[in-house]
Length: 144
Image 1: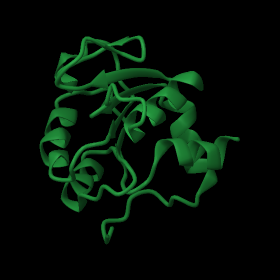
Image 2: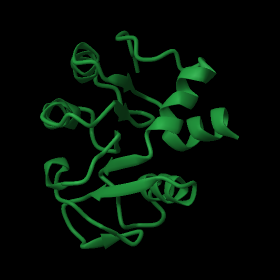
Image 3: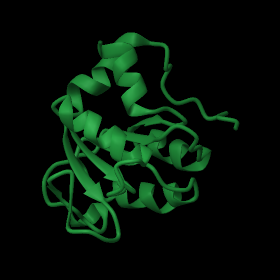
Image 4: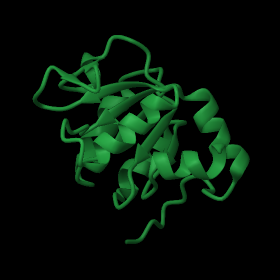
């Protein structure tokens, strides 16, 4: 899995800390209601560490005690970050949806997910782009 489009320097503790200190409202794209799935575990962890999560999932009404949205555009409250747990090609349409908003600062593709074109577009539009990294792992690494 190649990530030739530079995102942030993932070893830069200050830059990573800044993301977690300023991005408190996270839309979780593909948040499964199944507690054994990584998206559920990561969202629960983030929620337990003070983050407001907005589940985006095609079914269910409530996940982890939060209202479930069908798309990012359905969320009327401010969102700081999108954290995607979907197939890489979904990032192409997701970045278009993200760019229609003016509140999102970070476009994050989870561990194992790489979409260089979407991350390049995010960066060209002033967003921080992170790919192939897990928010839970990076939070533990830089904030504990």
